[in-house]
Image (cartoon, rainbow, N blue to C red; front, top):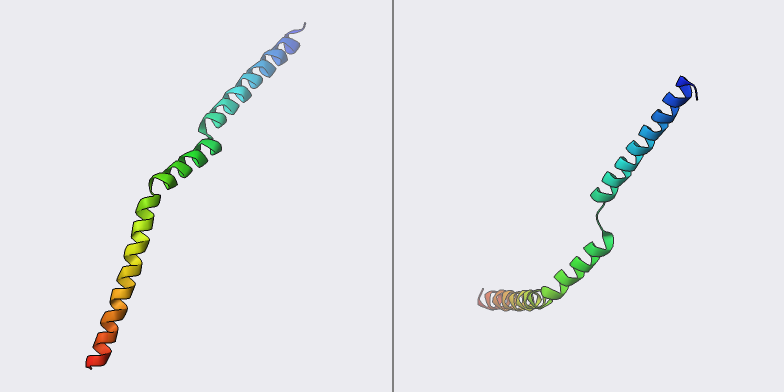
Length: 76
């Protein structure tokens, strides 16, 4: 093997190591989509009761505002 062939082989090996390192970093930086979906679903389950209560409060508030508006219309 000539010096240039040996240098080329070393360069190719170094390039391969660099590509692997870059791929490993990219894989580590990429979020696990399935895990994120599972976490979002768990969050939805944990907060479903709170969301339901908030919806009920909003409906009651709307009804109260409508009643107050009706009272103001009848008085004025």
